[in-house]
Image 1 (cartoon, helix red, strand yellow):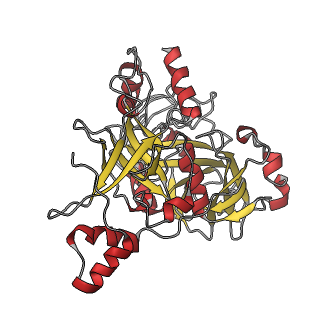
Image 2: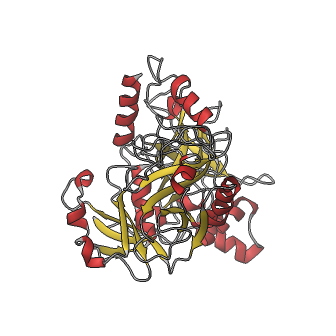
Image 3: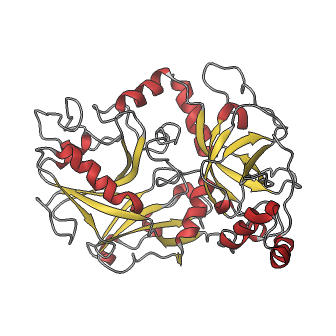
Length: 430
C-alpha cells in the first residue's frame, strides 16, 4: 500500500487551476472539495421530528394479504393463532391467519438470501383510517426506500399469481413517513409513547406509529395519512439530523447501505434489529439465512465508523464533529465524498481487505467491516479476535487514475453497545 500523502490544500489547488488548469495530483481533490464538501449538518437535537423524503409507502390489501406477505418477508406477519404452512408465497393454511396488530421491521430477500428491500410494515384495518381500501378494508402499508418503491411493487406482483391481493404505490400526499425521538429524559431506551406523542385522538385517525426496534435510541416511526405533519412535541429538523442519529447507532437503511442483491441480512444486523424471525414458516431466501444462523459464522457486520485526519491520533469514541468534518483544510474529507464500496485497508500494511465503505455524512458513516480485523469481537469457536491489534489503523484510498495521488483518510470502526450485547447474548444461546 502506498504511504499516505496529503494532497494540496483546496486553496493551493484552486490557485494552480487558475494558472495552469488543474494539477494532476489535485484534480480529484478539487472536485471533491467543490462538489461534496459542503457545510456538514449540525448535531441533531435531543428531541426531534424529521420527515423522511427518502422513504415511500405501498399498500398491500386483500383477503390473502396476510398469508401472501408471510411467504415473502423475513418477519412473522401473522399472530400465533394463524400459522401458515407450506413453502413460499403460495403457502396454504387450514386456518385463516390473523395479521399482527402492531407494525414491525422486516426485509424482502431474493432466492439466494440477499437483501432486496428493508421495510417497515404497518397492519391496518378498515381502510387505514381514511386511506381508500383497495380490494378489502384490511391490509398492510409497506414502507421502503423511495428510489426502490417501483422495483418493490414489481417484486411483490411477481409472486402474486392468483392470490387475492392488490398492490398500489401511494403518493407522499397520501402517506408521508416521519421519525420522532426524545432523549431528554437521559434514557434514550425508555422513551415512551405518552411522552413523545400527543394522545392518539389528537391527530384523529390519520396517524400510525411503531416503536423503531432497530436500536434502543431510534425513537418512533410515524406514518401521517394525508397532508400535514404529525403533532409531536419536538423540534422539526431536516432528514440529515435523523441520518446522523442513525449512523451513530450503527443502523443501515435503504439500498445505499444494504446493497441490493449483495447484502446478507445477518451481515446487515437485521436479526439483531428485530427484522428476522427464525421460528416462522418458509419465505423467499430463508434457506441461506437459516443455514448461516445455525451453521455459519458471521464474520462481517455493518458498523458505525469515524473518519479522521491522517495527522491526528485515532479517536477514542464514536462522535459526530460537524465543524471538523466541514473544514477543507483537514484530510478527513466529508464522508459523503468517499465513493461507495471503497475498500478499507490496513494503514502501512498489505493484506486482505478489512471491509468496504458504504455511506456517510460529516465525519461519520457506515461500513461493512471484518470483525476479526477491525474490532475486538471474538467470533464463535475462537479464543480471541483472530488478527485484531489495538495499534492497527485503517485507511480508505480512492481516486488514483493516471498516476494521480490518492485521496486518503483514516477510518475507525466502533461496535455499538446494543449490537455487542445482542451478539454476546446470541452466542451464549448456542
